[in-house]
Length: 116
Length: 108
Image (cartoon, rainbow over all chains, first blue to last red; front, side):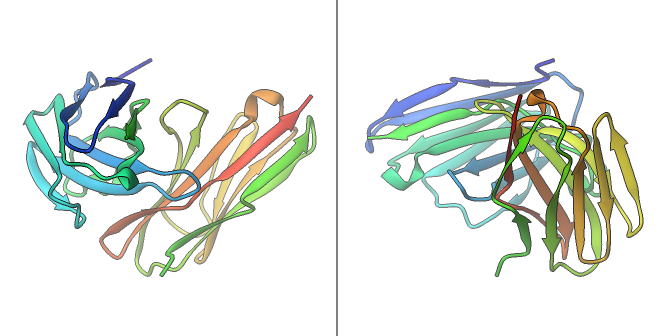
């Protein structure tokens, strides 16, 4: 089951490019998340949306800009990235509740981003 | 300051050799502890949620337990298909924090 779909799977871009990552969930969830995963490091939570409202932004640089047009879609717009931004970017979704962090999350398979 | 620490970083097992993974945490007011499995090239897959000390959950060869300071993931008689990275996530202090994971390799 691929309830959470991320595209593209791989992306190579220069530091001056602008690109977007897309995430779509088919699980009827109302909370969505962006994470950054670097080798040997814990997952870093970047953004959280619950019922299409941003509820958390963990001091992420402004070169990352999220967008949640509806409860099924989530985007991460990228511009002027740095080499240290190369990583796996994971999207997840969960049931909305009073406390979305207290729900198990369903992850996509990620976008592998490489910055030249 | 690390809130979630997983050990060991890597574990190599022979098929059938049972072992345990550790997830220790320092958050107060634990709201939930989650275990995930991640295969290479894939996103994490949810395994268990534990909410209070003394709670246990089982699924096939996996059993998760929880105390006030740590959680264990026991793998009984593992098979090669149990090879994966196992992630622990802790929700407490109004924050969700992940550990760096334990990579388990099971040899036939």
